[in-house]
Image (tube, one colour):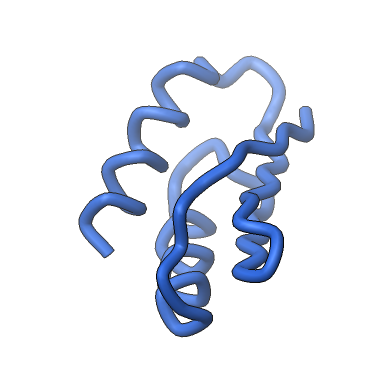
Length: 64
């Protein structure tokens, strides 16, 4: 399942760090963070709790 969300990214390096960390999460097939559009695109595996994944993604983005 592919989803796109609006996020706040301060710099391209932060976007790269977010993308790398989010891609490591269990249940994520791929993650793409676009600094210019301030969006993240997630490819989430079927059967995974989307709300739980989004909470983890939000924590990672906040930490970076």
